Image (cartoon, rainbow, N blue to C red; front, side):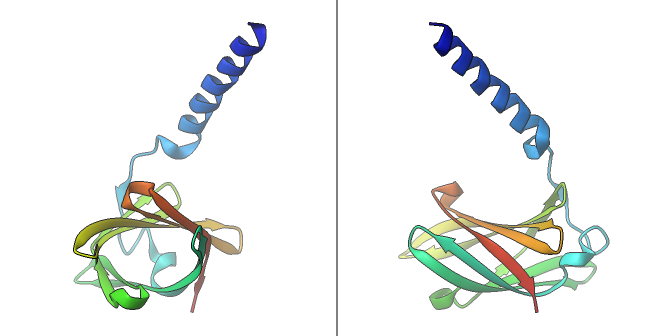
Length: 136
């Protein structure tokens, strides 16, 4: 019984710690000013359960607002209009068509020293890929 209580307590503490470490931060709209370091053309190199993949990403300013496009193989170039910051992470949300179904996706770019970490979550996180992003 003591082991169960201890494991349960550790799990609860881990959840509280995770929430306090940044997951509880609310997204704020990304602007040319607060997301200036992300503006440009990027190569996204990711690995997922189905293997490696590369995508192209462009983040630019149009009429004072950040917009983007992502190039996804067969999908071509897709527009991104929902761009926000959560802490230091830029989050770009878009939808694409897969066999007649609209699938949501979120690209997260997180600076970590001289590298930029990458996570792409498809269908609300049902399929994820991780890797790195490199500015061209």
